[in-house]
Image (cartoon, rainbow, N blue to C red; front, top):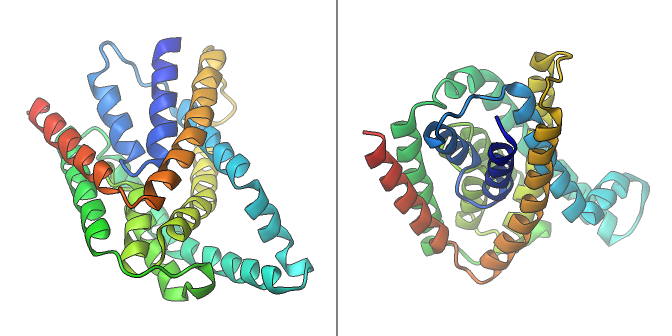
Length: 263
């Protein structure tokens, strides 16, 4: 893998991890159609995940500090963040169960481009339905344990290549009556333990080998970090304007195109 490949994959990872269009689906399609591409190995995937994880940490650093200190403070804000932390823990449970149980099976579907393309069509439909039938919004003070469980289950199901993690979690929260900004914020914060856990599992398989292309890998990681920051800001703006349907149309077009090209 050369520098251009690493930068392209880092850009795709950063943008599509947070935009509701499926990072796994886009990476699978990109690697399939890139001429002469050779799979760089697990270390590069781990580093890309670390790049996007750090983008969330930087963007939501204040929320993370308030979550970490909520049990040591008093007042209404502390109570809100204690409740939010509890909901994030609850949401992580179904995600972890699904991920640990089905990881190997769905990872084996990564090279199945027709299936990945069909799942992009599913993602588009999920986004369209959530935008069309979204209910009156509730903020984080009104979110329930059931909201967290449903969102965590949707996040776990996004292990299927082509199903967007951000898209599915935000969509189910919108359908359950959570307002757009709260749904997106909860989705991003919920991604941290999921991505961190997946990264730890992958690191256990990497071993101590750094490989000769570490500089190239780090360039891709930096691209994932910066593009991830841009994607977070862009998606929050889109959700505030209730324009998720543009991502639905994109997923339908991309899924249809690559399904046709893969035949």
